[in-house]
Length: 410
Image (tube, rainbow, N blue to C red; front, side):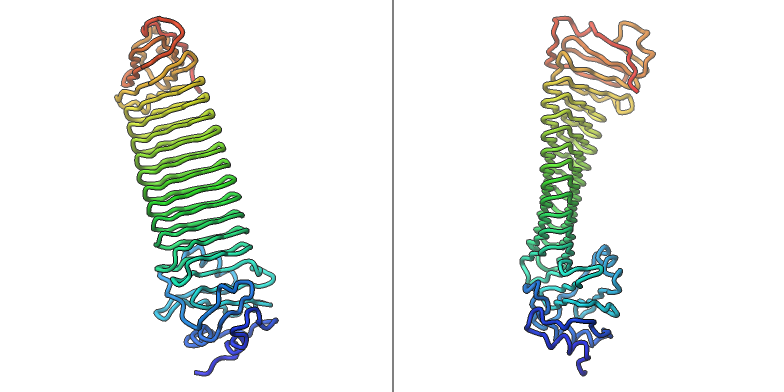
């Protein structure tokens, strides 16, 4: 089969990085076996990325092409397909002018000086033979082939998209608003600067947001998430997760499983969801909700709000004026325990129709109450049982001497 004119044009610059003729590339009729000739003859054609030097071999086959990549590639009239022979990048009627191309066993990249892509914007496929990739500057898309390398991959500057495979990947966004997707495997994802999105996928993943307001989703598996600085949103997903908010006003949701959630500095929101969770607000005015399960909520310092939810929960406000909130809708007959009740702490009882411990029956008409008990004891409202321990009230009055204000909570 003779080599087509377009392939000959590219082949002339084989071995000479950057020596691509300026001007339009002839239309490429890339029906097999023409593609084979093109890939066979094309070599190091991209001076900006000498690490992409080709050896005239087929790329490994790609088991699955992420749909997000296909959406982006289709916008410029190109396409990607898979056959038993290898991976094909079709560039029919693209007319990129001038163009830089790199095709070889270590990846594919292409760029144009103007239009949808710049010389800094690359699509790169990492093969099993490549163990590390620096995506350089620009808004890059890097895809680790199935069964191939696991990185590390460095996005550098620009808004990068890095998609891992089933191996244990190491993906680093560096600066720019990056999207890092680990896939299956025990992945390590680090966003770096700016507002990044990290998705661990299956497996026991380690996710670090870095600076700015990041979104971290551990997915399935026993994950560890670190928000670092910024107002981060951290979601543990399934299984037993460890989540640390760090600095900033963070939203932390453990998801399913018995999770350990730590707010860090500033005013955080912690949600245990399902499982027997540990929620520790640490410093700042934090809001904690245990959800289902027998949870432990610790406010530490600051004016915290503690909501046990379903199950037999243990609540400790720590220092500051803390609010212990109990709702009739989540009262299931389990016994909750307040470990420390200080003079300025408040118990909020919402939605209870019957007040069994009230001395004044008129107070039963309100839908919610603010209660400041004196001393240790048991507070009972219908199916709700609250045990008060280690109370540090200012007087020596017995628990039966309740101070109850019929203040309705909106």
